Image (cartoon, helix red, strand yellow):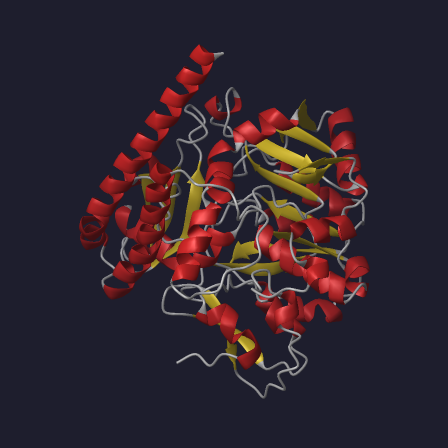
Length: 455
């Protein structure tokens, strides 16, 4: 049984913990350790004496009762990225939007390689002395974890997308021992937690002068990796899972999962298209992700993701979307373009938002229903900016089924981690979701046609 500190009980018991581990860093008594819960996510465990001063809750990105001055991403962006030249309700503060790739790192990265390019430049220019990013772990069963890179070679071992739960709780407590400055790579909730820590301790802004954001579709349980490895034909003992194996002769979305089967000493792979929809369904997703409305990792100096829009989507080599928000980030990108090291074209905000249409529809338009349904179950939810929109009845059905599938997928795999049984148990819910989604999209299409006629 995991013991939870009293001050963050509401976060963990309401299933709002995302496992970022900033509470471990902030605990003045060093009484917290990150451990796995029964559903394959990192959560804080009380392993020492807690004086309940509450410093741990101050840095929680899903704190249900935050102070007004840092209540949402809007307030934090004003504090840390107020110099950005543009502001859009959906994307947050920004300087420019781009789409493109790094000539050097494109083929060795999951997408366009811009993340690797920016991080290597931070080290080469001595803007930072090390980088906290995700690498393969030597701990059995923990396939990936945050690690510290001081050199280019160390860094480039981490140039792939990892859909495996990680925590900053294993590296951030070491930051005071590091001589020099640090850059950190993270998804939206992790970046928000770091900004909250910098707000409480301004010295951290100087210590951590650059945050690189990864545009995220939702954090997956470790069950996701176990499920895919079995679907690929690997046994229980496997290592080196790879989540985005490119097919450069196909489209960007036609990638595979692969891992090394220890028993047979063979690499096992499965095309993700044959595994089903892992993202639009909510399978194996964290509950806290249902309350994330940050599509673009709004609080990072630079954010990077996949360009899920034509013509970029048609290129199996991969293409990044890039958002710059600080002067430093814009300078790095502009210099890379001028030197011919980055091949990027500027986008307007409408086209950028279109490229993330599915994410906005789920994270913004479906959010009010998820909040109301969760609160009706007497569970707490965080303060949100897009929580008051009207949700059409047919879209409520879609949201209800996604929430059902998210929860049931974790429960079913925990009870019986067998892919064949899991697929059979989940099939009827996935069929219902597919039908409900088709009805929703069909009604939207009809309404658009009527609108054109009425014009």
